[in-house]
Length: 173
Image (cartoon, rainbow, N blue to C red):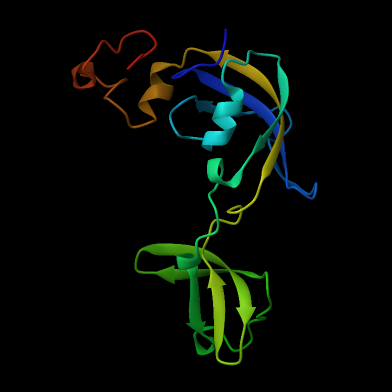
């Protein structure tokens, strides 16, 4: 069975940077599972997986535009140094979490100046070319529960009529 839209896919993977540093990986025996075409993984990874089958392995390179995007200048902010705890180590590359009225946000220090800190609120992998070394471990029709977990068309509920099509047996909506 080939990978196509609305299929459940599971992969074991290792993710590397351009310099060869390992950035992430699935845990041994615990592949990453997702519904293909639902936006649960970055677009470049989905493009590379299209039409693959269970058991196939691949090395997929994802450019920033198809990964976590290019670095956005508007996501660099100046924060007054006085907003940081007096004992905080302020050095380039150090990550911080801040509480805001909208929840917790993470950022990385780009530059430290006398009175301000330049904070980078871009995704940590923005601007990076990503290299996946992966094996497809499963390709199948998703369960009703897996489709319902996407918060989609009402599949898996008592009333599937909100879907606009038949949601029985595999939830193809």
